[in-house]
Image (cartoon, rainbow, N blue to C red; front, side, top):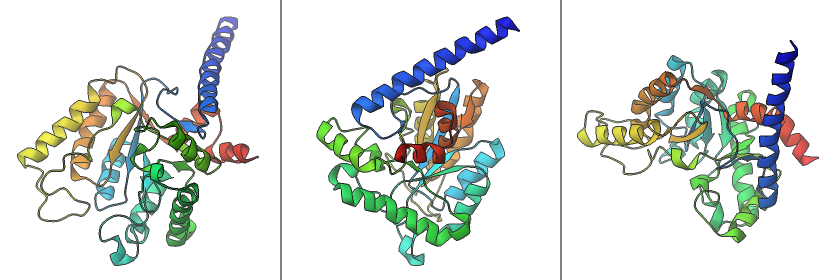
Length: 288
């Protein structure tokens, strides 16, 4: 028992040390609380994240996740997908999908109302994009809604691409107190939003042909870009639930990761793992 107690104590010191280092990094850079490239992740854990939805393909993605017993994180936009205005907005059009998403245990985050690049926006406009998306989500889902605490900046900007410190500090200042940021592991962008093939769109239709050679090649590219470089470390993977190639290749990626001993987690799980608190508790503490 003494040996066990010693080992647990030692592990606690190691974990706390890694968290402290990461927190110092974020404080030095003035970033809001969250996960950024280089921050600690639990080993052999994959965080599957999906941006830009909901769309016609989201329910298919949910089908895959349910079959595989995997929980994921979805960063949603209320009013930017094509033809969303036909029914007012994406949250209204896909209300049942969003309710299902929540009921099946997935984490839902804020990807802004209109998917605009924070780097080119004023702090007031950044705040407005987040708040309007939250308001629309609550208005459309009512009792089934909740606070979209986790934030994924559109395009990952300015934390992925820009090296302009002035822009980064401006955006970080605007995001302080608005929620928790959840970026992705830089080498684990699935690239599913690049090089669209014929038939890829946000809505289902007869033009979709998964047997098309270019469609299959894109699936192979997505698969190969992810599964051969995991090497046992924790990863946050970026997908988009707006592409049929994504939902087609997803089961194979999950199967491969499971075979390597990976487990799956959400942004909410990350909060509990890293800080020992729920996202709500953490944001309340941050605002005090």
